[in-house]
Amino acid sequence: MTTNIAFVGFGGVGQALAEILMERKESLLESYGLDAKVVAVADMMKGSIYDPEGLDIEKLLEAVRKDGTVEAYTGGSNVITGLSSIDTIIQTNADVIVEVTFTDVKTGEPAITHCRTAFEHYKSVVTTNKGPVALAYRELAELAEQNGVFFGFEGTVMSGTPALRMPIETLAGNEITEIRGILNGTTNYILTEMEKGQSYEGALSKAQKLGYAEADPTSDVEGYDARYKTAILSNYIMGVPLPHTEVECEGITKMSQEQVQAAIKQGKRWKLLATIKKEKGEVTASVKPECIDASDPLASVSGPTNAILYQCDLAGPILLTGAGAGLKETGFSLLIDLIHFQKTNKLAKIN
Ligand code: HSE
Image (cartoon, rainbow, N blue to C red; front, side, top):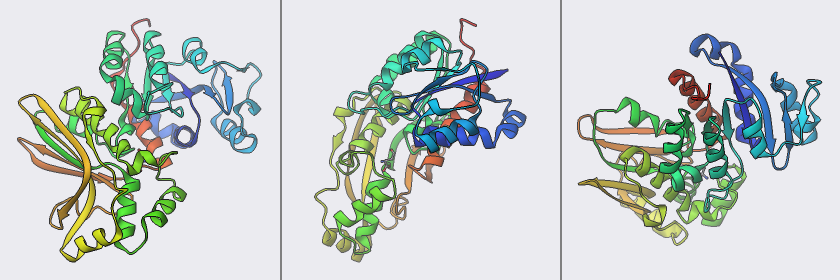
């Protein structure tokens, strides 16, 4: 059965997923039974387009990259342009909404409204936006469950590195009592560069050029990005709702190069660490710079790489490390969600 997909937001991550779906069309069908057809795109800056019969991805990407608007698409005669994001969610024949808008993480909007609207109209959502999962997880997950649709958000923590599904699925049966992690690539990159003698400002500017940092890097360097991810881990992995405002949070802006290099001389390393502890059903969490011993498994994680250590009561400590950002990696996180959507075969109750 074909899965009709609508992109709400079509920046670098959305385009990366579209490219993967085009390049791997045959193997996705053959290996996973995923027959994905892109039927619509709606983007605040790049316009909107809808063809119920499906859009040609190559021509769609060409229109965006050459003309900066999806409305320059020349692939079909029955296309409809000018639908808003909400109308694209409600009125098109999409089964799954890929929600990758530019969202204000403080309010979670417009992504929260997009997810809620999709679920209310019996459509599934896959997203990389942290806002909906950090701020409104319980409400959205319950609504999706109630309406028999799928809610995938693997890319919200560590992009395509499966920091969410791996503990939930593969480590099922364990109680996870503690999670420690390096959840922000920008700050880990800055600290690594400072160890090599680079200044804080120089390293931040390089991180921005390399595309690791958020649009407003304050979120990275003050620890807010890691704090949202910490709230997601508590909500989803620990099963305990934790408002991000209750996570103790300190960034790396006060750290000096001397401090970073002095630690190296003592065989230690400064890392911006997220820690979540669960005791008697209660969770406490923090994001702050910590000076850890070289023997700590997180000490050798350098550059923009992320890592997460799960303390499992049966399996012991399990370390997962990999990319925490990047267009292809984050596009891949959406693909994992689409493959799981296909596996769970969650067809909306209305069908
Ligand atoms: N700006 C984030 C980071 C990327 O540096 O890790 C995605 O959350």
